[in-house]
Image 1 (spheres, one colour):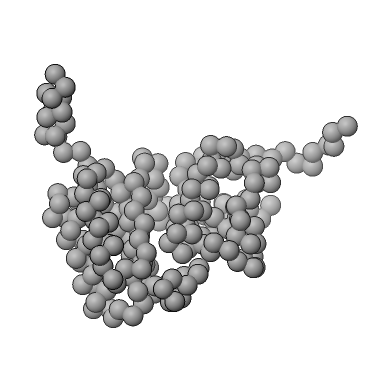
Image 2 (cartoon, rainbow over the protein chains, first blue to last red; image 1 turned 135 degrees about the vertical axis):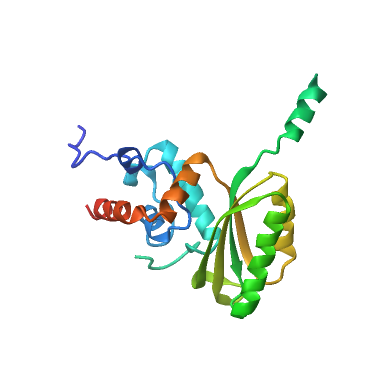
Length: 76
Length: 136
């Protein structure tokens, strides 16, 4: 028996018409990582596959230029 | 036929959009940093490229130490250049001991539009919306 969903998830990029993810914007990217700095799965954020790929690419770029940490204990 | 089309593309110089983030060591003085940046600015313009935008973030804290240093001078260069210029440009980065990290990214059209709007300061409103959305 499937549980009633509390709230329908949606892709924030599709909804808001965001076409490009800035890898230099650490505050925005922090929404897509957990407090250890790992990338959050799609099933939690609701991001569509197309934009999840861009999210992960942007996070990896940000890590390379030391805007985001590779690992961390308490980012939030 | 194939050679003909090849020479045609060689005649028309195609410029593509790129963006480089360079992280300089924090031991540089203001003067030295200016010198270093102007060197790369000159490299772009010498090779038939054009500088679109330049941004200096100043001394910024790194998310993790690089070469045992916890801060760095971030410089962002947005430019249009020939695609084969990038390998030369990055070679210069690698040879330069003042540079701790660099990242060159080719920009698609969404990115170009995004950067333009960001420069014009159109994003202060948009960012607020995003924050509210994130808080929900």
